[in-house]
Image (cartoon, rainbow, N blue to C red; front, side, top):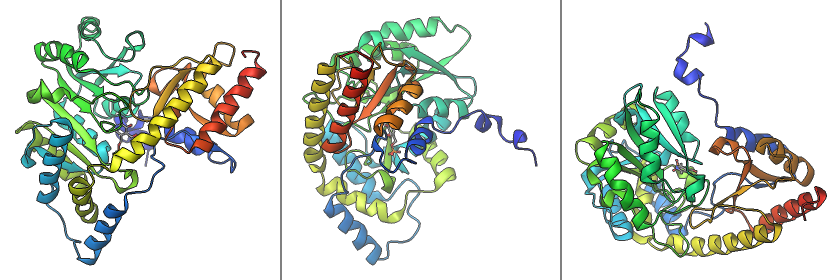
Length: 388
Ligand code: PLP
């Protein structure tokens, strides 16, 4: 059997560079990792108890493929109260994490050859999904506009690709890897250009509950008919491994996304769905304590990077800082990150997979002790190259 006769769209996609790098540095038993976007908090106790109760109640049967009614009802209320989403339970599909929601959405909305706009720096999964679905990813550099997409960048990108029918855009708000958060005005300004060009908006709002001193807005407020929202409990409730997410979309489209989901995964695990009902009915404040700690860590890191003269995009949400590698240092992000890992036993994520090969992403979903170790390593390295 020949491997090269397998589906070329899968063959051409590389395994996640983030996971590969994280795996590589994990071989060092002393490594301090600020690499993955993984909350370092435990799942809130009341949610764990709900999962245990669900097991004991033998809730072990196939749930309805859209997700159990109670969970879709709870999601409808929870996200309306939090962010003003206007979706009834029959406009919500429960997915295996946000990732499966993204996958089912990409598969449903687009046809091979369609163009999809990806504002950069970006979460690398979008480009991989574009590849698997034979789309044409059009990367838009937003570094000059504080990593916030502008209407002009959209029209310029469309004009620069006259042979491609642009049918989608991904907005990640708050952003991984930069922590940028769109203001209400910035989102509203994008509405006409998306509407006039019939562009589907995939609005990845997985970090919506993690904003610091600013409010999270949703594009669905202005463009409900052409926005698909991706959300879930991975970050807000520190439930990454439980794999529960949600897709919200207009009637008609969401039914099609539900089908793509059904034939890929059937449904998320029954027990997790019952536990998620608990998260959404009694866990409205679960993110608050984590948010406070993330904010303190963010402040520590920004102050430390300022002292080192390192520049970054002002992080207002999520739990990342995207910082430029100082000029005096090795500029290739993989080489530099490997050097930091080898010399100081500190793992920071290379910026290249996010679209900036001269940057690093620091995740502050990690203890203060680990953050101190990272700052210490950067300080020593900058002193070594004579940049301090
Ligand atoms: N979207 C963004 C922007 C992310 O950063 C992540 C995870 O890091 C995901 C989606 C995936 O979320 P989940 O673990 O719920 O699949």
